[in-house]
Length: 324
Image (cartoon, rainbow, N blue to C red; front, top):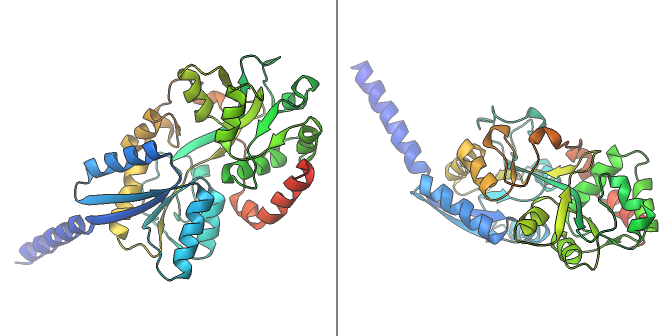
């Protein structure tokens, strides 16, 4: 009799768990529209009881929308899938994230992980150098952008408007010899910082500028379409954003949200990222066409908690250095 009761309880628990991962799931994301739809479709194919509704915009606008909803006492998303860990660190510090320490992260580099399981990496989107094939030389190092031949020919996204650009700036100043002096040399060489990565790609592919700092997938994709651009992973190393995913503490459907996290971290979910043209966060999922071997991509260290604490100071320092 005890065995029958135990079996019935286990069956009821299993049924309850399966029903828990049903219903509507609301995702706020900074992914490009096509990638967001593909991700939602792939997840729903694996979880037919769940319907994903997603809202897409740049991370600053997504966060402004979420902040307004929190202020009104009506936060809508179950999940965030956004560009950077600095934003996630801020939300974690405020108690806005639901930790999920049971998530299977055994296939991931521990250095990419939040120790409390409050958010998880889904990709490695690195920032390196893009150049137009008409450029006077082929850059190999970050220091090459300070060469006289590149004077007035450099575009970069602004950390005042781009979270990825802020992470990149902080990473370089923490890892390159001279720190902020590097940005002083870029300013002296006429580098222009404005807008986001898309603006850099447009300027360099169109020939208005011949060099730029940019996230990897944009020029690699455009080269495949015939654009006159090449991408370089500089010898010193690259910065990286991990496009982390996190469950909100106010999630209305936390079980479905956990299923979504599980999917993104699974090998299948990581292979989807590869098919979209991104370096996956887990090494066993392969690489997209056009990328060098993973061992040739050196990712520089970055302290997200320190970057959060120093965010205002770093932005002010950048403005001072670049005369903005």
